[in-house]
Figure (tube, rainbow, N blue to C red):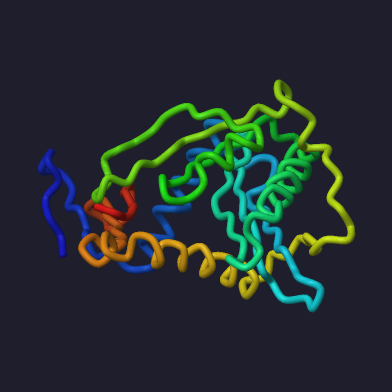
Length: 223
């Protein structure tokens, strides 16, 4: 479906093809790289760590991205059976160590009120903002940690007798970690998600020749 833009110049495509969305994303990435001298995703786009028990089963993990030398903790999950034993802390410490070794100067994350705001502050993060616009009274906590101004937690050694943490960027492993976090949503806010489900959208702007010249994508969640 197409609709006229507010300027009445080019139509906005509200149901673009996968190729059109990909073209928009490539254009956005190229712009960001140009504006940051090629350092937009530096030092590395993604880091994926998994926690394995003594039988080799994945029982936790952490996924991070980087944006202009800041590490973003995107996903952190530990199986319910092993929470409260320090494995979440170990995963964060190892991600910090690897991120700092790659050149990251800080870490950034967000967490919801039913998740782990106190945990992140306990491992050195500073609360910098909250957002209370979600349904059901849910509050989002935004936190950051500078690697050069706090303690040496990025240099902490992990006890070798405990479950091991390894880098694993396979799709299968990342899916296990993401599903683990997803079950946390289901257990705690399913009543909100049933009324306000996750909804993604892609709107694409094309010129008269059909060339993609702009767009916007995103998603809705928790109201």
